[in-house]
Amino acid sequence: MTSNIPILTLNNVSRTFGTFKAVTDVSETFGPDELNCIIGPNGAGKSTLLNMICGTLPVSSGSISFGETAIHGLSGDKIARLGIARKFQVPSVFESLTVFENFQVSAPANSDLAILEEILSTVNLVEDLDVTASDLPHGKKQWLEIGMALTMQPKVLLLDEPTAGLSADETSATAKFLRGLVGKVTVVVIEHDMAFVRELGARTIVLHHGEVIASGPFSEIENNEFVRDVYLGRR
Amino acid sequence: MTQLSSLLAANKTASGLRFRPATLIAILLILIMSVVPLFSNAYDLTNYRDVLLFGLFALSLDIFWGRTGILSFGHATFFGLGAYGMAVSSIHFGIDPSYVSIVGLLVGIGLAAVVAALVGYFILYGGVRGDHFTIVTLALTIVANHIAIGWSKVTGGDSGLIGIPPFSIFGFSFYDPMASYYLALIVLAICLFSAIWILNGRLGLILSAIRDDEVKAKTLGYDTKLILLITFVVSAMLASLAGALYVTNTGFVAPDMIALLLSTEVIIWVAVGGSGTLVGAVIGTAIVWWLQQKISSISVTAWPIAIGSFFIMLVLFFPRGPGAFVLEKVKAFQKSREGNK
Image 1 (cartoon, one colour):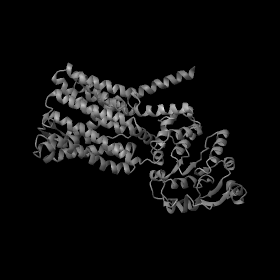
Image 2 (cartoon, chains in turn orange, yellow):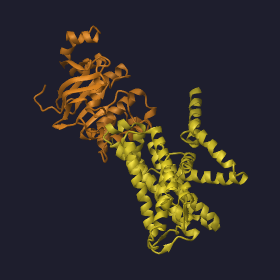
Image 3 (cartoon, chains in turn orange, yellow):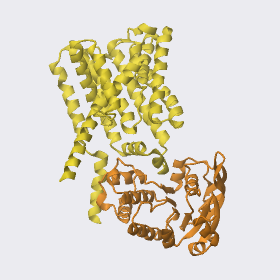
Image 4 (cartoon, rainbow over the protein chains, first blue to last red):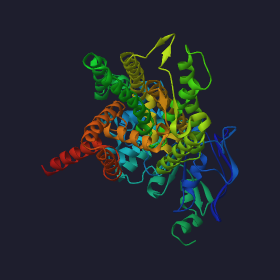
């Protein structure tokens, strides 16, 4: 893709559940500080792929490397400490803690307050500092979780459907925010919403039945006959 | 921006060393308990001393249950290991009386730590959580109780062991009720304030985070299994400390100190005081003890019925304790009133 050394490399990654092949032989590389998007219909294996990258699920075969370190087989907390942060599909925040306490848990000990402050304002939660997370509306929970991922100062940020349940305005704001991360951190976004993906204008990988059927700039993907058929359910 | 900085800074120190109401109550409680001997006779004092040690036992359970949300039904095992560790090493080995108490204490706490680490390793690293954890630890108490009864050569079997000397250190014996009362109070105060201080800090936040969503905590880089295991072992060690000190007061150890009933009782003590509040565990122990005195004086058979019914209500209606139950109802009532306006 780029001339840079990839930060994240997937090599023939597969995952089976019993006889069901959820992900088959996915080989992809992600360059440093790039924005990437993985799309595909329901059950295409997107979340499974993300789960394998961050160690929530072991791979059935194949290998995953972070820089030059093989990370498949490492536990989730070790992978996180290497610098891979993840936002779950269903907003996972610590419901009984306040917004600031959530940040305190996600940020490394002795983090610079100025950085936390910047992130808090980036995700628009300054005024909700002392609000218990369970009392936040859905959209703000999504932002809180993104903010928590950022406080980890990750090198790779994995986002599983960041716009699920957001309004059109919020979705557009998310796209703008993610485009702003280009050049700062490698981002891999899983998405459903085509309008959002178009707005991201990122390199896009299409999964179908667990296999990569196309990858490239979104403009190319959008005009790919096969991808269209898959999305319209013709194949 | 600068305003936000100061707000953040205030918030940061506040969550570390915040004087929560519970902390204030803890200070008051310890102050009151330290003047109690001035107004009590020796017999009452020995009772209060036992309540303090049971309060320490309840605190040990609350550290694990209250913060991680995982209920251990096996804490009597650790109390009992402390008790038997102290008893066996002070009776069987002919250790010099000047340091037998210290050896007994170390043996008791060491045994509890090893058993908690072993059992905890297999069940926590095996992913056992929630009700399953409760059931496995329940079985642990039953196994420990059978060993205490069956291995009569060492444990004295059903009749237990008699003749444990009062706690002594550097030649000073805490034989006197007043001395043993203050020993119990000082140990309890140290453990209570350390627990409050540590759990109000970052570790407390992380444990709450694990309780809310362990997978998420893991993806933030926390070795959640190790953190839970360490908390479990520390909690078990505190329980054994209470058990070891308790038998130096009673002078004997018996299998009911390592039994299912005691595991049940300690859960009730913590629940009555409100789990997760730490100081509540100690207060709950005192309340239940007082009720037991009152109800038993009316009818001896009434107490088991009362405590049994309470336990059933606890499971069915207010799993987070009666205090939390009332608070929730009050909050819900306030919300509905606000909604109507």
